[in-house]
Image (tube, rainbow, N blue to C red; front, side, top):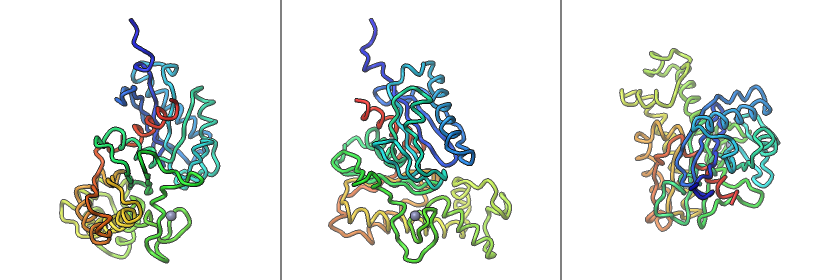
Length: 327
Ligand SMILES: [Zn+2]
C-alpha cells in the first residue's frame, strides 16, 4: 500500500548567500534527505545566479534519488529586502540586485511553486520550528554572516511589517556618524559586527602596524581569511583578534538589548557564520552587554542562545516557508 500523499511530500529549501547557494530537500517532518551546494557567482548577474539556484535544487533532489515532480514547493531565503507577496528581491546589496523577479524566474526554471523570503526571516522560522521545542510566542533571530540579518516572530508568526521589510536588524543605526555600511548608510550594526566588518577592522589595524598571528599564516593581505582562523588565533592568545571580536560582541549585545527593550521576546537566538565559528568566544560578552544595557523588566527570563543548526538554519527555514505557504 502506498503511503498517504502528505507523508511522501517533499519540500526544497534554498539559502541564497553572497558567496554560496545551499539547497536541501526535506520530508514533511523536516528531516533533510538531500542537499547540495554551489557558488553564487553574483558578478555574473541575476539571470545566471537564478540558473545556478535551479541547478542546486536539482542536485539536492538528485542526491536523494528523487525527481523534481516529488517536490511540492520551493522556499528560498534571499539576502536583502524582499516583497514576499510578489517574490521580488527589492534590494540585495551583497548580490548587487535591485528589483529581481526571483519567484517568477525560478518558477519558470523549475516548474514548481516558489516562495521567497528574506534569508534571516527564513532562518528564524527554521530555528523556531525545529529547535525551539517550548514553542515560545515571541522570538528574535540575529544572524551574523557576510552581512547581519534579523527576523522577528510575534505570536508564532513572522512579523513582516507594513510593506514586508521588517526585521532589518543589521541596519539599526547604533553609532551616529559611524562606519559606512553596504546599504549606503553610516553607523549600522552590520558595519560593526558582520564578518565583513570584522575582517575590515583587522585589515585596517594591520595597515596601521598592529601585530597579529594571522599575517604569519595568511600573509599581510589576509588572503582566504575565514572566521575559523579568528577562533584559532584567539585560542593562541592573539590580542588584536581578541579585541576586535570582543568589540563585535559588545555591539551585538547592544543590539540585543535594544531588541529586548522593544519586543520583550522570550528567546533571542543568535546564528550565522560568525557565531558558528566564534560563539564560544562571543556569547559571554553578548550576554553581559545585553544585561548591562537592557531594561531589567524587559530582560527578566529572556533566553539569549546560539542556534545549533549552524548553516542549516537557512535551508530548513526556507523549507518551513515552502511548507507553510503551500498548505
Ligand atoms: Zn546599513
